[in-house]
Image (tube, rainbow, N blue to C red):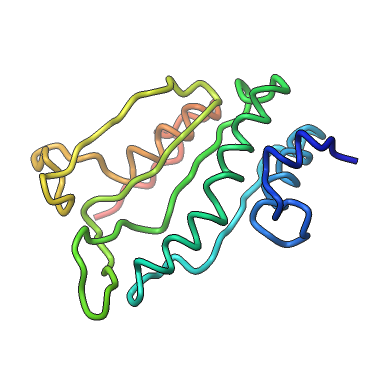
Length: 166
C-alpha cells in the first residue's frame, strides 16, 4: 500500500521482500507503529577478496535505501524521535592486502548517526593521513564513547550501566 513516490525513494529493490531496501521500508513501517528498537543487517561486507567489485554491489544495495529511510522518517516527522545508527563491527585497513581486499582494523572505524537528537554535519574524531590509526593517539574516540552517546540519546545514563573490572 506504499505510494509510487515512496517506492521510488527506496528504489526498485524495495518491491522485493527480504532485500535490504524492503527491510528499510519495513523498518519505517515498524517505527510508525511504535516499535522501539529495529535492527537491520546487510551481510557480505567482509571484503578480504575482490573489494573493487564487491563493495560497489553492496553500496548499490544499501546507499539509496539507507538515505531513503532517513529522508522518509524526516518527511513523516519521525526522525527527531528516532535514532538511526549505521555501523559495522570494526574498521577496515585503508590499503589493499592479498587479492584486492582489506583486512580488519581495530584502530579506526566509521559510523554515522542521524535523528534522535544528533546534530547534523558533525564529524567526531580523525584518523591519520592513511586512515589507519587515530590522529589523536592520546585521547582517541573509544567504542565506549559511541555507546555512551547512543545511550544518552536514548535517555539512559551510561554510567549506571558501567561494570568496572580489572
